Image 1: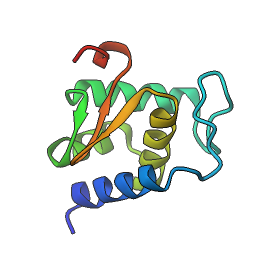
Image 2: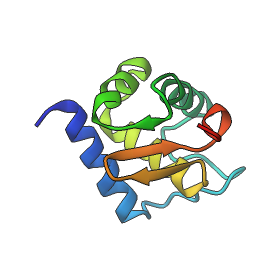
Image 3: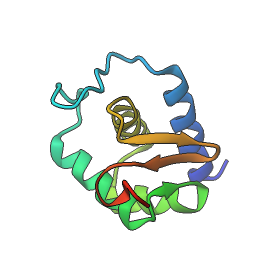
Length: 102
């Protein structure tokens, strides 16, 4: 399985499972192992990749952040629960910041 496809599959599974002890409420504690800087880096990478992340953009986000699949999944789930991203058929769409109207 290509890395981009594996990343999107993990993101989709994580988003549908939603739970994992994450609050997802703005102002709440971030998931274990994730800092505000990590979230900011992720959001910047997703914005740079075009806000809608599918198979073609997944490797770009991974490369820009240096995060492994697990950390990318946790951040995506956190942002979804916080109302800052939404799942799509092939990945997710960042819906905050510069991507709010993209």
